[in-house]
Length: 194
Image (cartoon, rainbow, N blue to C red):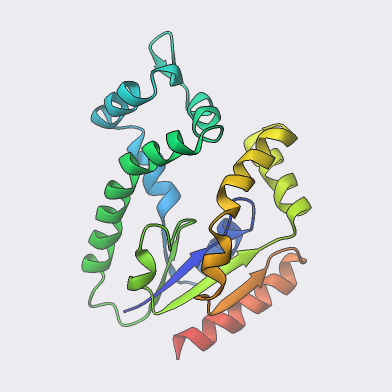
């Protein structure tokens, strides 16, 4: 099995690229989806309550509140990552083991591919890219956040982007019509399947 990593900042088009690959019949592992499921587990929510008590209102967890907390303080973001990353790595390694006999190419969609050390499992690394104004607009629309909040989120992620570019095999500009983007994805997928 050949594992291909898809990385990129928030709002850069990773989900769109992953969706196009799925439509072409490829297996795509989604780290964000694994993370969302983690918030349904009582044991994990207990850890969140211990470390981020202000993310609960009237005893009910508020993910938007947690987002505000961690994206306004890099130390708190690191604390959250320390809680989530071991779980995500476990899920990723389970997926690799489960599909070890698969003879094709599969993809893993993960924003922090390099920061979590998953790049060492990937034969090829793709990075999605969009101009800052497009990225910011996408984040504001999708997450229903203000321009200032979008700037904070993007700024925190931007710090490590220069480290990635040297290790990337393909950079995909997602600020193009979907038909053009799809054609490029199919072309890259064909190259990777060889």
